[in-house]
Length: 284
Image 1 (cartoon, rainbow, N blue to C red):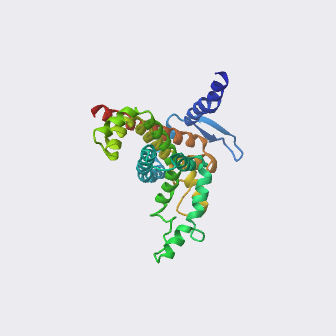
Image 2: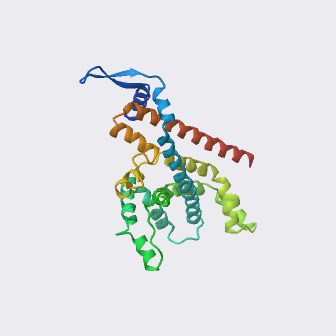
Image 3: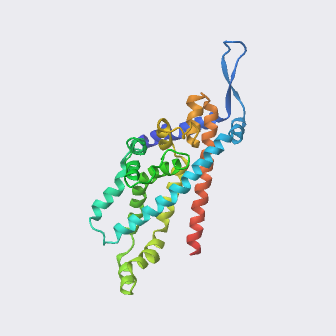
């Protein structure tokens, strides 16, 4: 266990402790033109700056809109594909599983670059398709469509992972239970809604939390889209604000405080979703 524990300490625990320590300090320039910069303890001053930063909360609002589009579609499509593959009526089920899961294997940056070029008006087959049927070509980088464009990238990459988790849970359902339901006259839709779906509720809850956390930490897609669209600003999403503070503004202490606020919001919302879904299952 020593190598695994060493990596955990170096990659996860030590950076977390260092980030917490940074968030309580700030840099102060010394007197004179060439005064040295020293670190001073400011307590919760950096967190106050984050809370008072309106651009950070604007980014949270944009992230929320992104999540409202991406999360429900990702979960529903993952569940739909898992039920279809498990139904036994679909042809080439093994091939279908690989095809659906394959986008998840593509790194997020590469998928964002690929979709970014698919959105560019000059080379976009989507725009060309609209023009071919005589419809006005949409600007997929506009203020009204940028959230859908970004959500599409997240959905494309995350559906396969969620499908695999739900499909694995479906395979654990005893076949005798399914056979008994069919002998009692249940249709395929009734089996899916009244037997399979309630029995894989924990897997659905798990994937819901994964999707929620992914939405709160979205970074690769909008950051990669920045050179292609003027709509995406350096602080478009909360995680982009952290990057901008740390490397553009050279404010590591403010970036650490912003990152910890995002962690707090992520943990709070994830716990709320988890306990809400668990209570719903107990009530049923």
